[in-house]
Image (cartoon, rainbow, N blue to C red; front, top):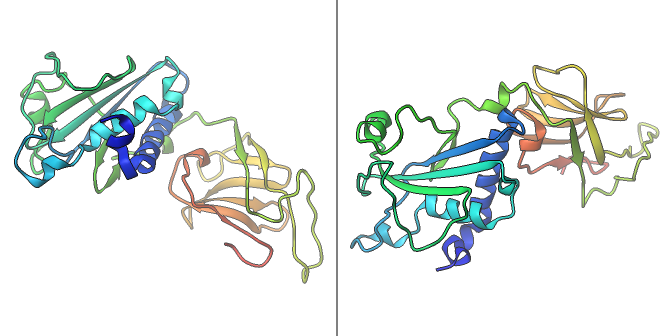
Length: 263
């Protein structure tokens, strides 16, 4: 099968997951050469010849490897290596220095391995005691089919952030170039929230804030959201839920003021 067939109707979800893992890693490490290491636990059976139902499904790590390989993401910048491990209790134990052979060819920046892993037991002895991984190796992301898990999201403690954040809107009727205006309280307010927001010199609630004119994009911990607030009257023009280190990591959906309600 080609990558499109392997990913199937999960293509958008898997690609978004890869993008999110990459974005968080880069927010921590900046532009230095990086190795992104992902462990997919409860991955799915590597041996599709087994006579059981799960053997018919493509392992999550295989889909991630193909998404990284075929999507034109920033990880294909020549400075990033991606290593994906697929862990499942039905996989065989193979030392990390022994090659594994697959029926597909991956690009040079991409590595993929299967490991034997029982989710009900301690991961360390299984991965390192049998030399399935190099001693002391740490993973940037541990992914389970039930969700993405960062034990400690590094974006929240990072000291490097994007210098600019671009905000665009395709449906808001009140985005009007660089013009900002206010009317009487009984009238609809309109303002431009679209454009390039630049990093403020000081943190807000221990996280970066960005400004475009009187609009400020900042973290609101009481509501666990990133919001575009009007610096003049405090009104919220747009917001997105999500406890993330900076707003570019937000995957939305964004709620926008339409003149009467937040939609």
